[in-house]
Length: 49
Image 1 (cartoon, rainbow, N blue to C red):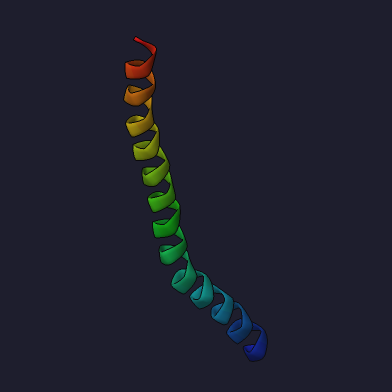
Image 2 (tube, helix red, strand yellow):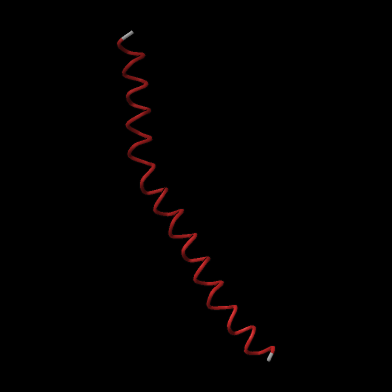
């Protein structure tokens, strides 16, 4: 019983430790893609006009 509880506790701690960096990476990728699209759109419209 105690070993099973410790195994679940270990998984929970692992998730809590690994989630913030993964979330920050996800947010950075979304921000980078959004800024890259915003930068490329005006250049395309300038060349078209």
